Image 1 (cartoon, rainbow, N blue to C red):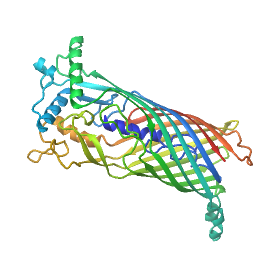
Image 2 (image 1 turned 60 degrees about the horizontal axis):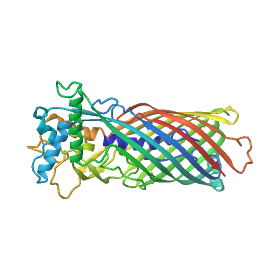
Image 3 (image 1 turned 120 degrees about the vertical axis):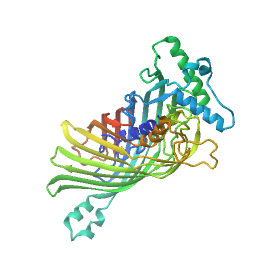
Image 4 (image 1 turned 180 degrees about the horizontal axis):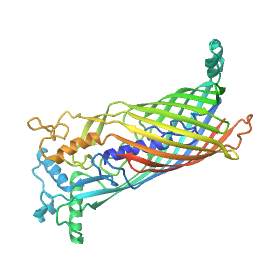
Length: 457
């Protein structure tokens, strides 16, 4: 769950970089908020201010490394009970057995598996500003190379910033997975009620506060600096646009609330670096094709996060500990095409984005390790502390499920009312679009709708 939530954070951000004015956008997963809105694709000097409204929704997840299809997480209350008992003993509080298990001894050491069903809704308003400084005055330095000279003549230094305001509501509900639960666990209202009491008691013991997480706040502040160039009738192309950006994400948003399994991180915990490139080829007056690519480079960071003690998923562990996380590399590839003037001053953009995040590495960063986690629990050289396969799977899943990938398709329509007026001092752009997950692994199935208005002046 914790990694699916983190991935949602990353995925939402990359979605907001979908197909808005390429002026387009590139996709939590809020890791790269509005990286190129109102910046890439601009072919003029001046300023650009953009406001974007978006809505994201998800009620289902793609499979994880162990094949859980359609649910955000599965957990076995047997593992939660064992974990709570180990935690209580290692804290010097004695053994712990849930009241329900004391009343129903037949359930001791038997699997009672719950599916976590999540519903996520997010509304955002993003503000972005960019500025451009022409490099035309430096073109004379490249008189010996006509192609370089033309690129510098149409080039500019660009810089800007963006900040999203976010309202998120995430809700978890739980249902018994009868196929994976103990034999004889049939449909019965009384049995279901007792199993739910057991789950609630364990959640309270572990320290989980509730099933609904509602947060209004901000995401990460993104600042960027780069160069871009626009040329017309370059080689055999009608137009050529090239850009390269370096950016920094400043952790101004909220971290994940570890007491709410449904919560979503709205920020990185350390300053991160973004690298972004774009190549757009104008094949005809009405047709352009391009490709955006980039990566997110995150520094190792210290997280207060829940970490498995036994075989339970991290989000449902009683152990909240300082962990050094070395994040994997996040990269994306986003080919697209644009058809201009499909109607009067209306342009169509279609993109297909692929986003990949590598596996994270975790290290127990506590000075005192009274309660051991799966990261440091060992017996006779066994890194899992036991031969119980469930605990081995928890250790493996902790790392494997930190990696993820997603593919999504986006469509947008942009209206440019002053397109024909080259002398206009302002150039507003209005964009409507949608984006949806096509395929993925370890990520939510997201649906994204957005509307943006930008003003170039």
